[in-house]
Image (cartoon, rainbow, N blue to C red; front, top):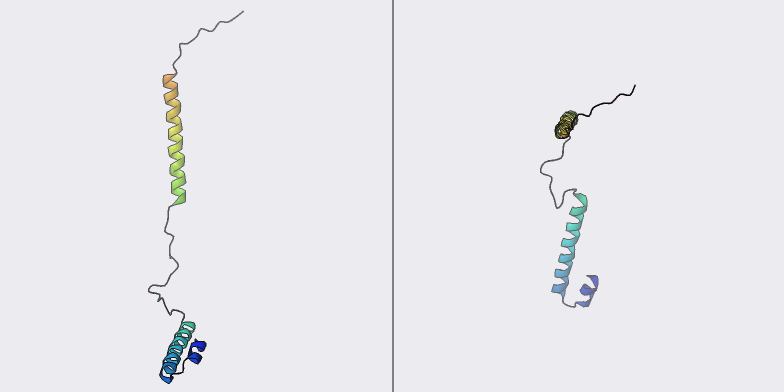
Length: 93
């Protein structure tokens, strides 16, 4: 920007260039001083007072019970469909 100012011989253009430089410097100074120059925090983050989420203990207990019932059901179904004729036991004396 300084080279453009030096190239210009018209005093009015120089003042315009100096005003532009001054505005840019002001903006930069304001941006460096203020933490929230561009964005403003509407609602700051806070730590939750109580836990909000899935109840892991309840999920584990329910999964164990459902898994156990499913296992028993599979065993009973397989037992019902695998009916074999009873074989005679031969004993040797």
